[in-house]
Image (cartoon, rainbow, N blue to C red; front, side):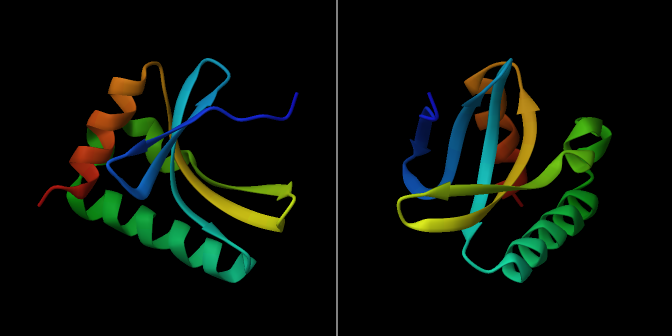
Length: 99
């Protein structure tokens, strides 16, 4: 039906989307494709630096850019990970945001 289910985490900086088989974290949405790729690269570097990859080895390989067309036009969404539960996604994003 094309309608996505999503959840905001207190601030609108992080959005969790329901996907097939679980949830994903959206860390950015851009009109310009170049900005989306820049954001994705920054997240890969951050994950490496924080060594979160060792615990969540699939996350880095699953930083992706998805194109979406809605009534406002074409957007490039930067999404991270695939998690079984919403709590798993929230816990991962807390690790990402922590020192």
